[in-house]
Image (cartoon, rainbow, N blue to C red; front, top):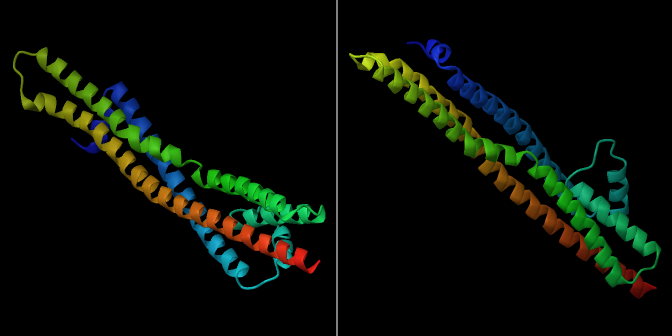
Length: 224
C-alpha cells in the first residue's frame, strides 16, 4: 500500500477533500512567503526612515525627498507625508495651533489606519485555513472510515486486512488537514505579532511627529 495508491483508490468524496486541503496548503504557503517579504520590507523601511528622521535633517527637505520617490510611499514615510502636508496647508492658512495640531493628528491617524489595513491584509486567510483545515480533513476521515465499516458489514468473514486500506485512505485526509493547518497557524501568530509591533511604531511616530510640529508652530508664533 503506497501513499500514491491509497490516494488514487480513495473514494471520490475523500479525493475532493484531499484536493481542497492541498489547494489550501498551497494558497497558505503563497500568502506566507508574500507576507514575509511585505513585513520584512516594512520593518526595514521603518527603521531606515526613523534613522533619517532623527538624524537632524530639515523636515522640509525630508518632505521633498519623500515626495520625489518614484515608488509608492508606504509605512512611516506615508504617515510623515500626510502629516507634514496637512501642517503646510494649515500653516499657510494661518490656522491657530490647536486646530493645526488636530488637523495633523487626524490626517496621520487616517494614514496609520490605512497602513495597518495594508499590513493586516490576507492574515485572516491564514487564520481561516489554520482553523478549518483539520475539520475538513476530519470529515474526509469519518467518511472513509464509515465506508470501510459499511463494506465490512456486507461480508461474512471480516478481517483487518479488509478494512486497513480504507482506514489508511481516510487517515491521509486528517494528515493533510494538519499539514495545511499547522504552518498557517504558526505563520499567522508570528505575523500578527509583527503587525502589532509595526502598528505601535507607526502610532508612536505619529504622536512624536505631531508634538514636534506643534513645538515648531509655537516657536514660529513667538518669533512673529
